[in-house]
Picture (tube, rainbow, N blue to C red):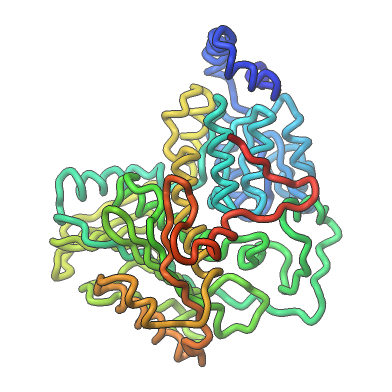
Length: 484
C-alpha cells in the first residue's frame, strides 16, 4: 500500500486540482485488497492491547512499535516480532507504513495525529482525542482537508448492542420520553504518592520527546508511567480517562449524536483524602444542560470507606443502582442501564423488561478502522474524528469548570437546575466525603458557564476565566499549529 502515501505537497495540491483526484481514486481502488501496514505509537498498557488487536485484524500487519521509553518499545516489539523505535518521527517518515495507532499519553494525541496526517498516514487515535478543545478542532479541520481515515478509540461505538438499545429507546419508544441521564464512573483508585524531591525519569526514556508539547514541570508523584493521567500538564483526569467512554455512549445512545456539546455546565469536585501529587479531582461531578435534556455525571476514585472494596452507589430515587461505570437513561416509563458489554431496561418498579448483550469490542473497533483504510470509505467508520471531538468536548468542558472553580458553594450549585436528581447527586457526593475525613470545604465549585457549541467558546458571565483553558501554551518545537 506504499503507493497510497501522499507527500504534504501532493496532499494540498490534490485539494485544488480536480484532475489529480481521478488518478488518485484509481490508485486507491487498486490498492483496496492490500494489507495495511500499521505502527503503534505508545507501548504502555493501551498500546499493548491495540498491538494485539491490530496483529489479529484481517487485512492489517503490525510492523513497528514506537515509544520514547526504549525498554517498553523493545519489549512490546519483541512480543509481536515488530521493529522497535523510540522516535515517532521515524514512523512518520517511513513510506512503508500506511497507518498509525496513537496510544501515547493524552498530551501527545493531537500533535501526533496532525504530524501523521501531514505525513499522509491514516490514523487511529485513542481517546480522549484532545488535551484541549482548541487542539481537537485542529485535527478535525486537518482531516476534513484531505482523504485520510481517522478513527477515535471509543470502541463501544463498534458494539452492535448500541444500535439495538437505540432502536428500543427511540424507534420502539420502549420507555417513553427521556427525562435526563445519570452517568457514573465510580471506580476506586489509590493515591499516587507525593515525593519530597522530583522524580527522575527512567534512563531508558527520551524525556524531551516524552514531554513533547507539555510544559517542563517537576514530577512529584511516585511512578513515571500511567500516573501522568492525574496531572493536568499531561493528562485529563478520570473525566478524560473513563468519562469520555461513558459520555460518548450517552451521546450515541441517548442523544443519537444530535447534541454536539453542552450549552451550560456547572461542576464541583476536589482531590480529597490522599494528600498526594495529583492535580485532577478524585471526586468530580457535573451538570450538562443541552437543547434536549440534561445529563449529570458523577466520578469518584474513593471507595465507600477507607479500606473497603468497591465504590459507592449514586442511586438517588431510582429503584435500582446505576452501573458503577456506565449510565442510566431516566425515562417516563422506566430506566435504561447501560455499561460496557451489557445493558438492561427496567420499569418504574425496577423489574427487568429487556436485556442487551455486547460483543468483543476492541477487535471489532480495530477491524472497522482497518476495513475503512483498505476501502478508503471514511463514511464506514464507527467513530470518526468529528464524533470523537464532540464527545471529548464534554470532558474538556467539565475539566475547565473544575479548573475555573473557587470556594465550594452548595447554593450556587443547586440553583443551576430545577431537576430533582441534581441536588440528590450533590448530597450523595457530599455524604461520601465523611468516611474519608473530608468535608465540602476541600471541594471547589464553578459558576454556571455558558458555552456556544458553534464557536466552541464560552460566552456571557465568567467566559474570560473559562476560555483561557481552551488552549495551552506549547513547548519549543512541539507546537500544534492552527489549521483553517
